Image (tube, rainbow, N blue to C red; front, side, top):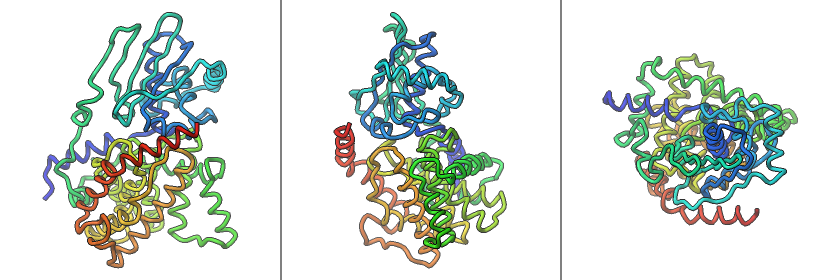
Length: 429
């Protein structure tokens, strides 16, 4: 029997980790820094000096900033400072005007914006120092994309908390006592009114998928797939629709579409991955809204539960763990039970454990499509009573042990991998 305190923690976790986000969340975090700094400056910045952690640099160099048509952290810092809404969180750029974008690009052309590496042990760290005349304001965000830890104006501290400590304690929920079985039971029994907000994930991320189908964004993976369906080189089956729609949403998001994603655990692509495959299967089955709500709750909460064991940013592509949430939602929709869900997740850990995160970019849509395919394949195996066995690789007998092994690999075993990835990327600049 699921304890009431854990039910409450699950609802709080979903509310905290499912947030609309416009654009890739790493450059958006820097844009938010700049927007807050500009508010305290009280004037239009003349110069911007930003610094970010190596991991944030990795995830901010190759992604298009919405509404700008440009890639990278400098334009994010500039447009955030000139037109960002400091109260909008991960939607900080939602109201930026064309004139403000032109002004931001002029700052870049005039070499008035710099972005460098910060000396920090934190994986997720951004700071922006904006100045006008003799006035300067510095704002720092750490550990979470919207967690402000420092505000300084003209050398005086306006606000400060310890960036290195207490971040985990600052979370409004704890999943320390939870298991994957608890997640499943919650999704099956929670009063729908308590979690009906998860349906917004379906509407937001489906709108991104619709935009991506146009072929105007990113690597236009979905449009390419659709052309090959039309030419008879791909079948228009459920797997193709799952992969196509998932890739389309990521293509649009990474390619700069001015549409928010419903993020999961601080990532729009993770939110897309936990949403779109479930929505496609629900549409295929003509499931009603109540059924879709439970399936999305299971998918998103399982993704949050797994990601809760991971670092904020690492060498492991976290789209893979969000896809394990999607596998849970799809397995249940297709008639599976908690055992089926566990089998599917274990098989995915045996399949996707080695997928690295080599920075946010248009190629993330490729990883989304690969993860969506793996999820559906693992679900079909589980429904056929087949899974990667406990004696194979890092997969264990239980799903929770398997998750723990995967997260240990990401947290400790892939540290040097992450450093090498960052070194390779920075040496390309």
